[in-house]
Length: 80
Image (cartoon, rainbow, N blue to C red; front, side, top):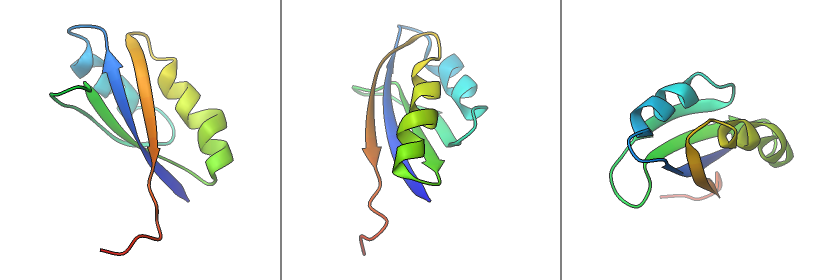
């Protein structure tokens, strides 16, 4: 499995609604609205990086009200 954080900017005042919509999408593990330069942070997952790029991230980007995303794959090999 491949996981990533998707940092999301939304239209003004839409972060909470968009976070709830994202939580219902296939491949979205969690979705929270936050403060700072990004409005929503979602954790997503797929069986492979190719599938993540081909299906999960595009489904996130199609949610109405999202203006910009930044996908940050998680390195599963990193040790604390």
